[in-house]
Length: 203
Image (tube, rainbow, N blue to C red; front, top):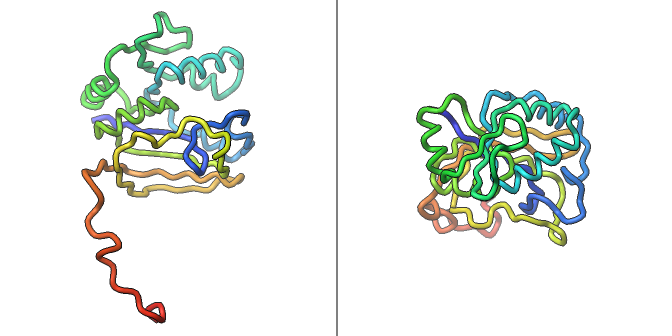
């Protein structure tokens, strides 16, 4: 059985990007970049058409960038009904099949684990279907309420998250990795099950 990880970078208020802000919100963190470069590359990258267009354009503009050289060598699956073959980015395969059906089959018999890259609608579909084993975000220390674009969590179901790893990078970004569980409703208990407060705070 292969695993699926959703891998996102977000602002503190849950946006994927912000109008007029540079990539990675302008943060230059050698520690974060070193961590990225040290990640296991033996997995299949899952992308939607919008993310593929953006990333493949960047790769064409910066062919010698170490990160894009690494990405070019990795197998990439692009879910799209609008793109045409052949895809220009090396090792990219076009899949017109529904992402949920394709990923479900690959989890059962595929050759390697899978991770998303951006592609918010693909991530949302996989989460709703209960196919995600790990949910990882790197939270950048900005609130971009005035210019934020692409709210990541809109349309998500209720999800419980079990924290399994965390790390703080040198520029204040926070890595949070969870095991997600799609919930049928609010968890049992809550404020109604807490003991009554006492005037002195319970001391």
